[in-house]
View 1 (spheres, helix red, strand yellow):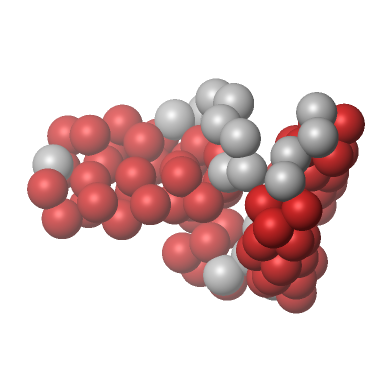
View 2 (view 1 turned 120 degrees about the vertical axis):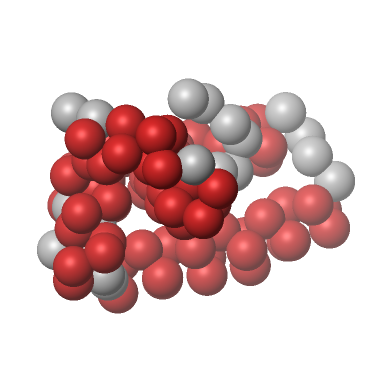
Length: 97
């Protein structure tokens, strides 16, 4: 899944949270998924994010931020992105592995 400014991990965690309250079948599918299940399990047990997910999130955030600069986004957009993405990176990198 590629969405500008949004790493996949928070979306997977949000989906697990919502499915846990709305659909047992979809929640079980997500928890048992070979790719998403371990991420959700790590978060539920230890509030941890795997190092590979941290690196991929950082790479995608840097790519989107660089593209904004490259394509000449307005200065207020660049500033807003820098603040929001900076906080996202701080959150991601302060979680345990």
